[in-house]
Length: 110
Length: 114
Image (cartoon, rainbow over all chains, first blue to last red; front, top):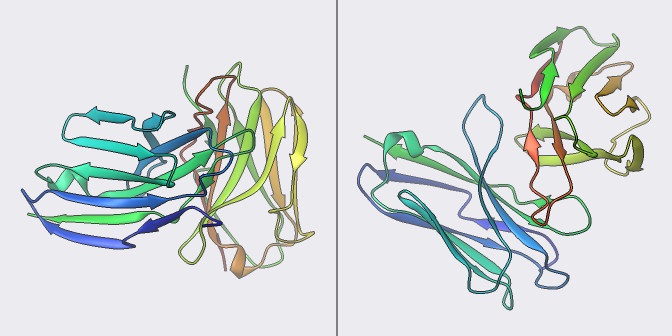
């Protein structure tokens, strides 16, 4: 993997469903993995910063895991709500600027 | 702190005109980044500064784009002359010295070139 890649590109779920999406990144020169939440017409807001292999972080109904050896991170949302609708960006950090994926656009239908 | 401040929030201009976007980073942050967001390419890094010095401008699309950071609290991104394909949302972000390299984004400037 040469770039930060996210899948799926977009996702539609019903309110109350749990969902997850993937961020894949080059495992070499790993420093940190960032997740951002980006609502339409707003700026990206940091959700998690993860640095250690096996890290798991949680904020309310949202959690994330990290595997630095194989180069992936999962973001989970439990019991999706309409207000979770946003684009979720991941970015690999290092000594250079963050390298962003193109995001997963989540739409939660009431 | 008010966070990263960008102005204007919206800009509509005609093709050929000069456009200047402004950014005030978070006080004490020594890195400043300019990004462009489009549907096709997502969030693209245009240029970034460290201690007011441009470090990497390889993302600047053409010579029509230029950026300056005359002091630690102010940066501009200028497009001259502007073209319709420059229409996008331009974000500024800053970051301080931290283990996490977390970047803080401004609200963005939505540019429309007619």
